[in-house]
Amino acid sequence: MSDSNEKHTLGCQCKPNCKCQSCNTTLVAKHCHCLGLVDHIQKVAISDRSTTASCGSAQTKKCCKSSYRSSSCELGSVTESSLCNCGEHCRCAKRSCTDGKSPCNCGEHCKCVKCCCTDGKSPCKCSEHCKCAKCSCADGKSPCNCGEHCKCAKCSCADGKSPCNCGEKCKCAKCSCTDGKSPCKCSKHCKCAKCSCADGKLPCNCGEHCKCAKCSCADGKSPCNCGEHCKCAKCSCTDGKSPCNCGKHCKCTKCCCTDGKSPCNCGKHCKCAKCSCTDGKSPCNCGKHCKCAKCSCADGKSPCNCGEHCKCAKCSCTDGKSPCNCGKHCKCAKCCCTDGK
Image 1 (cartoon, rainbow, N blue to C red):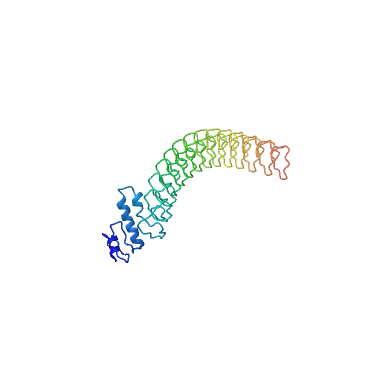
Image 2: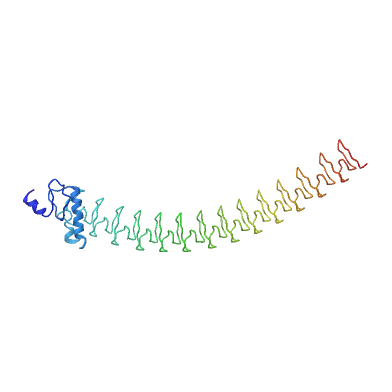
């Protein structure tokens, strides 16, 4: 190494073959172009400047040559137009400038994908124009996590301004807000698929406009389970207002109401296929208009087995009123009446 080079490497154990790994100065040997060495020296240089104005002015000019565009930029005399490490027009893919002018990491025009600036000027992490994918700003200005225009997929803001989790315009798929303003879980305009609010304002579970498929409200206002307009497929209301199981307009396939108002099993308009009412009002089994195929009524009013208008093919009445076997108008082919008439 020449005397000139030795002056540059004073205090640095650097060799021309670029294998120096323990440099402790900001000066670099002219012939050491190794990327590892340059990176190492760069880190040392930044560390040395950490207590000062972070690069800036004179020290900034020690970062790169003005015309050097290599990925392994030399450190030496520079101008502010350098493309490497410290210039305001820095376009390097992986740079860690701290001069406040570079678009990487700390500049106001930062477009780095993984930026971790904390200067308040960068659009990453702390600026109001933050577009980072995974941003965790806490300044109240960033659109990520804490800003009012937050568009993050997984946002957990708690400032009351973000549209995610706590904002009144929350559109998160899985929102768990509890501020009373969010449309998810606690707001009257809740449109969540699986909502379990209990504030009395929601359309889900407790609201008067509930349209949930599986609703279990018990407030008397929901159309599901307890409301008079209940349209649930599997409803088991007991309030006497629901059209299912207990209401007068019950249309359930399998209804077992016992209030005397339902048209199924106990109502006077019962049309169930398999009805076994015993109230004397149903047209099945016990009513005077019974039309069941297999009827075995014994009330004296049914047209089958015991009524005076019995038309059964195989009738064996003994009341003296049937036209078969015992009546005076018997027309059976094989009649064996014993009344003498």
